[in-house]
Amino acid sequence: MRFNVAQLLKEPVGSTRKYHLAEEIQDLDEEVKLTHPVEGAIRLIHTTEGVLVSGQLHTEVELTCSRCLESFSTAVDFMLEEEFHPTIDINSGAKLPLLDGEDRATLIDGQHIIDLLEVMRQDILLALPPRPLCKPDCAGLCSQCGQNLNEGPCTCEQPLGDPRWEVLRTLR
Ligand SMILES: [Zn+2]
Ligand SMILES: [Zn+2]
Image (cartoon, rainbow, N blue to C red; front, top):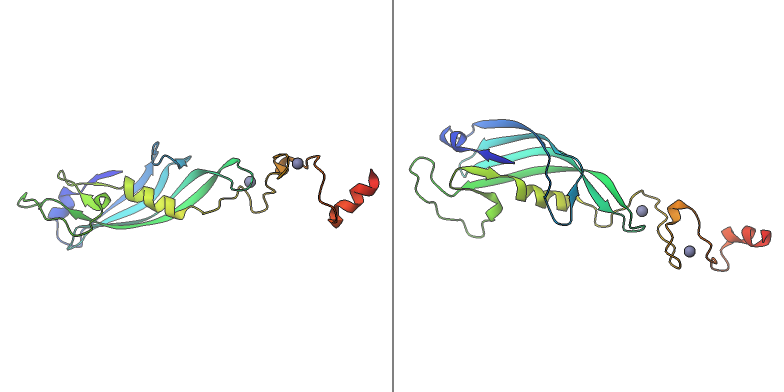
């Protein structure tokens, strides 16, 4: 996820580079495990301020279902669009002042390297559902015995008055 942009920064504003990503990322985040490489095309453009990186990317992550607590894998598609700013003038080698509130994740380092990992981590976290479900109609866990009801009904007494259970009661 690291790109050397020294050559791009020496070319005129508007110059571009295109890359195809297919990167296995092991340790993106403590809480999010990727189960598929990050794939897609990205474009780097030399702007007046630095380098604009953009692309449409795809990966898969392992999530925990908020109802049944099983883990499952789900596809994540996200847009990457971030402008990176140099910390060193490419021509003179002079140190450049940091902008106010500049995020360290979007700095081009002293070796003219752009590292996409941190912005990608933030984009992936933002793209995740706040309450993940293994399937839209996940039945969840029984509130009494904790059985995963996707695997079948449990033997707990059901609350009285639910018409769906009247039939079963008369069969007993
Ligand atoms: Zn579930
Ligand atoms: Zn139960």
